[in-house]
Length: 207
Length: 207
Length: 207
Image 1: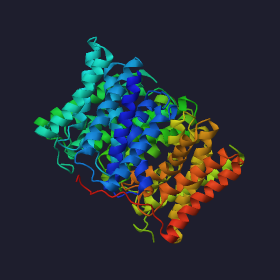
Image 2: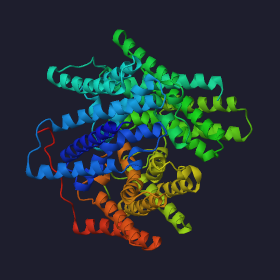
Image 3: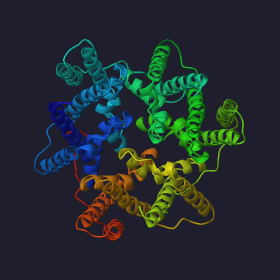
Image 4: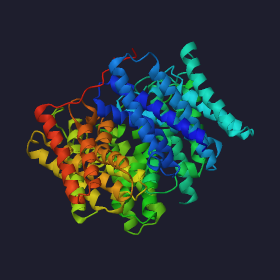
């Protein structure tokens, strides 16, 4: 992992912490409850990835990640006391975390010698499981599964693009940049043009 | 693990993926959201088992499992476009996954030298946690806990039977077959005769 | 870990199992479903801690913990058949589990050489994740996040007090006792005086 990679990871942690704090705020949690949710959102995806790949858990190995998550949470709480949170901050922070963590997860799997399918799955887990745990703890249907949000699509396609470009011999940083832009672009495009995949519709109860 | 065991595991993965896809379809998820839910259902239980027992995670060690899950998901999506899903497919696929994974989990724990209680717990986790994670992600009360479903009962008794037969000196494959049939039989009997265990009833709020 | 520490752990496991059984009873689960929920509540927090710290999972290494959880569950089920569960048993059992497990988790992290922030986080995880998993499986908003419950506050402050006293050179058992009393005291005080932290209020939907 390059030094640039570590900076991007810290940005991803902070973005996910902001998204977690905002979701907890909508649920009217108290300040320390907000900190717990923000922390889970920030480090949950990478934690599951590290457990699955049998690596040291990243935020235990390096306390800077927890500190970044706490700082971003405190900033969000203080900011919201004096000003209105701008529209779309939650969606933007979430999309940023998805893009940065997704590609970072896929890259780590490839670096460990796993094949492309495992790398894409690790990207999906790293990018989305923090927000997924957050939504589960808040007793919501995870945002990643909501119709027209294009979450799962964005991260699966973005990580697949990254893995494909690496397989074609592209330099790692270029491929990573392309994958991140693809994830962000697909999320933005989904919001603007209301893109959506076909829905799998079954009757709610057993037919 | 015998080669037969690996085939049964693949069948269990496919059955759980079908059950996951059907639950996601009732929730109107889009196709890739369905794939994520089907994947979690298919590999979630064995993943938790492998983490707890400090073994390499089975689907990372052998990509055939993820491929089986994806193929079963794609088949379910395509089948449902042209034909009506027959009644009871969800329950049957879920019961099959429960039986195959439950006994496989108990067997792995015994092979590692753990005692009978740990083996039964590992069987319950391997068999039921995939469906449990699926239901949590879909924001449902897990099927395993619903009254009259006899899920927890079937898997606890089936795994206990398997462990008991092994302790009595029966050959592993015979004991495994008996355990699987017990799990399937208890689930079928529960549906036909509406069997149920006593309910533990407390007032919904603190008395 | 001292022998006293192991006894306190067993008490914590039993207390959490009682709390889990009571929550499952309010949901009208059948007996074996109650046993599963009680087991998850009893061992969930320590399990996540052990996975994160890459230690052998405590209840797999020592079957006494599972046996204590099962015995406490059976006692709760039998007791409730003949007598009324006294008021506040759930809250008391939950607070006891929070205090015993929280400090035990922080102590283990310090013993492994981790710094104070990681120790506090491990205390929060060990103390609260069992109840958190229980509430997620029962499809509730976790008790730790409910307003005015002062859960997250009690465990974060109690574990911080413990870590701070150790840093000041206090003997481990004294510091542990002080931390546990702080957690219990904060929970009791919160109920009596209706203490609460500031709430982070955002509109329920995107503003």
